Length: 184
Image (cartoon, rainbow, N blue to C red):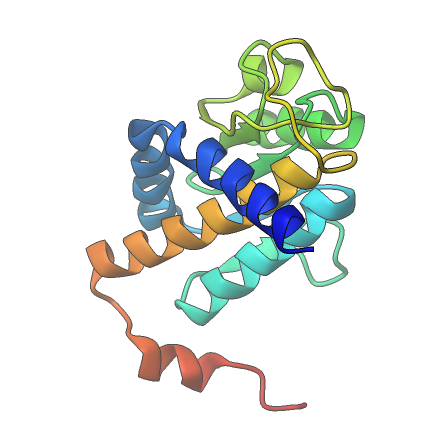
């Protein structure tokens, strides 16, 4: 068991080491400039996206998850963060296309710089991790399906939130705690 845990943490560390700092900082700047933020993802990637949206809400951002009943329309000056490991998930590409039609900015979070999603986005955050596709250029992993991507995604997005909060200087842990759910 310890060897498996060590291997998984080593794999994630290697992925995060290879993230473009410029791309991560660009997403941070886009978060700070956006009027509203929308997060889209399917499956486990969508769950990581929801965790990201929750933290953005705690930090005081106006954020929504696509597909939820209370999600408003996307408009100019808004940001869609479109998450798809493969960059080819049909629903996510459709959300990106619609967001662009409305004048919103789109950031693709994917492994594939040459994907449909990356092509239609204004910015990219490339996570050089393995997906369920196991393309030749993806790193090897002991983990099934897209685990390596999803785990790296979660940690990277948390790091971006921490960095953004520090840069924006608009909130702190005490304020974030006040925004935390109390109907639990």
